Image (cartoon, rainbow, N blue to C red; front, side, top):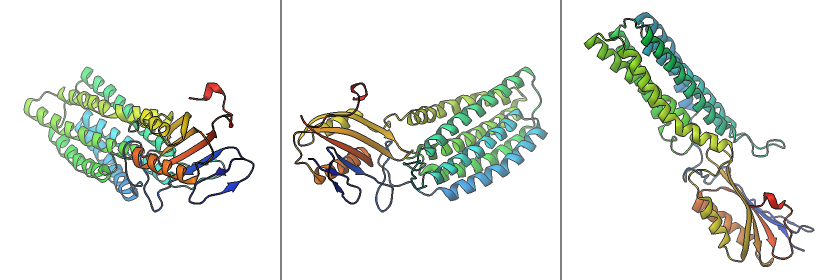
Amino acid sequence: MDDHRQDHRHDHDHAGHDHEHSHDHDHGHGGHSHSGLGHVHAPKNFGPAFAIGIALNLGFVGVEAAYGWLSNSMALVADAGHNLSDVLGLAAAWIAAVLVKRAPSARFTYGLRGSSILAALFNAVVLLVATGGIIVEAVQRFLEPAPVAGTTVMVVAGIGILINGFTAWLFASGSKDDINIRGAYLHMVADAAVSAGVVLAGLVILATGFDWIDPLVSLAIAALIIAATWGLLRDSVAMSLAAVPAGIDPEAVRAYLAARPGVRGLHDLHIWPMSTTEVALTAHLVIADAAHGRLFLKETADALRARFGIGHTTLQIEIEGQTACTLPKSCVA
């Protein structure tokens, strides 16, 4: 009768099982955790960045909204509204960054890692909704043009560039490796771009007196934000649907596993993101005999981590001609 073995920093041998499993978990303690978007170290602590970003933006929202109202600038008011959505987005991303560190429980066996994916999706949606509000207000201003205090607009928006640019810099180091941090980063970059556009609008209005420049610039910036946010929305939706992360070639993973010594067949291969920085894999490997033990499983799991950034591997061994897969044929791929 075959052994049932689990490699999870220690091994257990149980009699009475005809499947062999390897569990390779990496929770970021004393090692490396990898993302499907690229090989990265364990998620950094962006708590201070979130705190600073939220405080700065929340304070600036009040100032910008007040001066936007007094200067009759739709671009400035729209920027304040967008900035307020950023505070909400930063808060959501921060909460998720904390929740992903929660330990697994009997009910949430992966912990709350998936909250980072939900936060990224939330950020993408909030960005697009806020941008939609900017478009609506800009169109209304086209229909009902009003004089704009260009100098006030330029000064306030210039302060916004500094605040949002600094906050974006705080998240820049994690924007390529963690889609949740990328969401926070894009919020700040988008706001800096909006503020820059508002400064430009104020300058042109002062030079020409054309007040319609204000809503025109708002529309142009809205288009840029939508273009920049589309990738975040696409990736976060894919992750929430447990799609293979974009940085991993599933066929290359399949080919590697199929080429392992003694492997005669492979099925039920699944690769999905556990969080915005961690990837899991499960697969059934059909082998010729029961001679392959812990070393085979450990080597395979280590290679999957090193080659593909998959840090949580579960492999089920099935002996060719002896072990019948219990999964329905329609579910086996």
